[in-house]
Amino acid sequence: MRRSKQQTAETRQQIIEAASALFRERGIEGVSVAEIMEEAGLTHGGFYKHFDSKEALLNEAAIAAFNESMCAWEATLANPENASQSVASLIDQYLSESHADDITHGCPVVALGSEISRRTSDLKHSFAAGIKGMIDVFEQQLKNEGIAESQNFAVVIVANLVGTMMLARCADNDKTKAYYLKTSNEMLHHLLSSCAEKGQKIGEDEWS
Image (cartoon, rainbow, N blue to C red; front, side, top):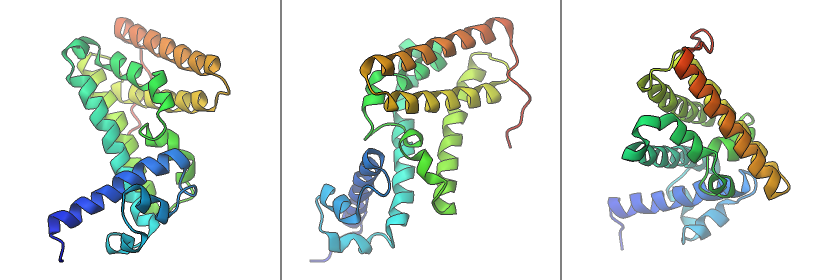
């Protein structure tokens, strides 16, 4: 029986979602095509009807992972309770223990960033676009809150968030993990308040 275009598209999306979760959980080399297809509830033989290679799937899975993160951020920003403190709310969400524990559905930069430098230029491009999307969200919210040098401050925040989450996930006990998350959160909140009150400059505009 011939499958419809909609069924084909739905099956392809199943594979992408399964891959997006497994790549973040186990790493790029830690999961095979067969395991991805099994997770998606499909047979191994059907993979190449949808993707030319594992690398092609990895690119789509990375885009899906960034989209998943953006949807979570949009939900936070849509909450009326966070309207006056949108940047602080995003920081709190990212540096939460629940995010640290949820590798499978967490930030793709933390889960896969160290492996991307050794991959193809197409994948690097997708990751670069995803990271810029994260920075753009913070930049816009900082502008909305009247923070000076919003673009540069956004870069500082995203770099700090990603670095802190990597440290937290490498911690060998819950106390150390919580300390990293709490300390970074408090320092970012302090810097945010300082910049809002004093109009402190973060640096010159270097974004292109």
